[in-house]
Image 1 (cartoon, rainbow, N blue to C red):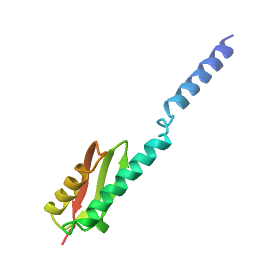
Image 2 (image 1 turned 180 degrees about the vertical axis):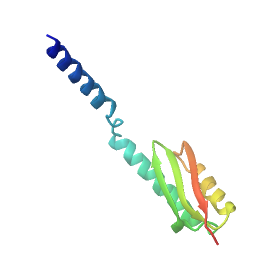
Image 3 (image 1 turned 90 degrees about the horizontal axis):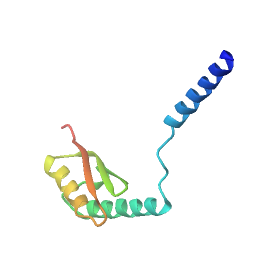
Length: 103
């Protein structure tokens, strides 16, 4: 009996460990399409603005939250990029991780 109880406890522990490591639910196709469209709109705004060097800034979007990363020549350029992203249709919020390029 004790061996059977020990085996059951071990299997239960294993099942709980595997369930705890499960990845978050996958996004729907619609969510992926929406995020891709937002990313494209933000990138287009960055490219159109002469104050922003768009090639130095990466844009990622997940569930309408835009993350900007990369390098800017000045704090003003980084803030301009964030402002452009914030005013883009569909953007819920912006995480500005742009760093200042060392001179």
